[in-house]
Length: 104
Image (tube, rainbow, N blue to C red):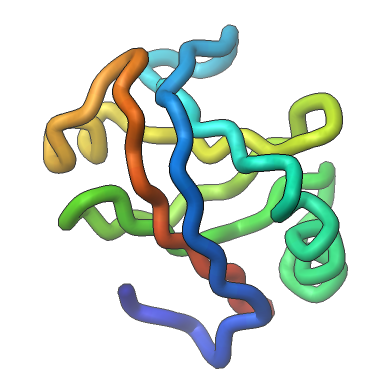
């Protein structure tokens, strides 16, 4: 993964790919609850507003940039159609995510 600078936070987690109403053709990976506090702390330096947090992520061999969306007490990581295809993942699949948040 390329980075704009030193990471504020690096996390890895496993998640089940879900669908949530929102911009198609996105599916999402919910961030586990135990990472939320540290993401909120890093977001103070990284977020560009509205609670969204820019991230660099990897699923399988697919590297991509996107933004976490706040949803209830957690965040959702969008899994774009191109990433779904490159990583060979779809709705209901269990995935491993490597994610980093860097400063603006």
